[in-house]
Image 1 (tube, rainbow, N blue to C red):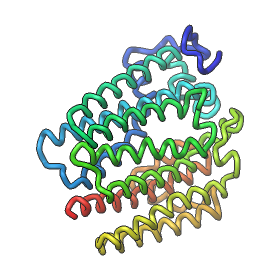
Image 2 (image 1 turned 135 degrees about the vertical axis):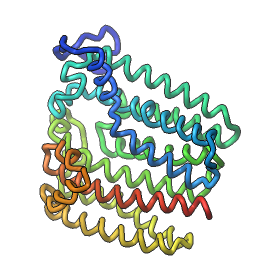
Image 3 (image 1 turned 120 degrees about the horizontal axis):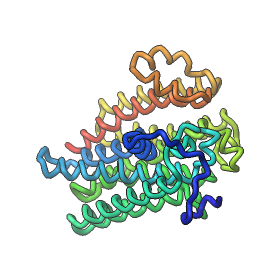
Image 4 (image 1 turned 120 degrees about the vertical axis):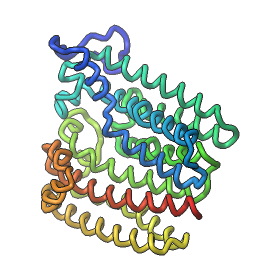
Length: 343
C-alpha cells in the first residue's frame, strides 16, 4: 500500500483481537509518545519564567497549563502519532512493539488518532492566541500553526523531511525548542532579545542531540533509504557533528552569563561545559562503550530502565550521555531563566 494513501485503509499488520478498551486507550496514548512531551514543557516553562511577567495567580497558571497541553499531549503528540503512522513499515524492523506493527492499533485508527489530536491543537492554539493582541497574538497562533505543519511534513510525503538529516534536525529544533520558548514568553509579555537568544541556544542544542538519537534506528533507516547521519557518515563522525551543535551554543550560553553579569551562573555553566566536554571526548574515542562507566550512577539515579530500553550500543551510550548533558543543561537554563526574570 502507498504510505501516502489516506483512504480505503486496510491493515498491513495482523490485528490483535484479544484487546480490551483499556488496552486500546493505552495504545492510543502510546502512539502520542508521552516521554517526548518533556522537551516542549521545558521550553515553555523556561520561556515563561524568563519573561519576568508571570505572576503566582490562578489565571497565569491556567495560561501556562493550557500552553503545556497545547505543545505537549496535543502538538508533540500529533507529530509523534503522524511519525508512527508513516514509519509503520520501518518500525516493523526497528521497533516491532509499537502500536501499529504490534497489531494493537489499525492504520485507520492511527489516522483518526493524529487527525483528532491535530485538530484539537489547532483549535486550542487559535483560541488561546485570540486572548491577546499584537505581537503576542501573532506569535502564539503562528507558532502552533508552524509547529503542526512541521510536525506533519517531517514524517509525511511528499516532503518527508526525516529522509534527510539536513532538513529533519532543524525542523525538530524549530518545533520542539525555538517556538516553545517564544510561546512561553508570549503568553505573558512581548519578546525580549535575551529570550530570543535563549530560544536559539535551546534549538541548536536540540538539533545536536537529534543527530545522536538516530543511532537507535540506523539499521531500519539504511534499509528504508533514510539519510540519517549514522547511515551517511558513521558513528564517530556523527558524534563529532553532534557535539559541535551542542558545544557551540553552550559556549555562547557561558559567554552570555558573563556578558549579562550573572557571575555565579557563569562559573556554574563553565564547570558544566567542562564536564560535558570530558564525556564527549570519552564517547568519541569509544562510541559503543565509552560511557559504560556511568552505568552505576545512572542506575542509582533511577534511569537504568531508560538506558536499558535500547539494544543498540551506540544509542545506549547516547542515552547515558543524554542524562548527564540534559541534566546539567536543564539546571543551567532554569537558573538563567530565573535570573533573566529579575533582570
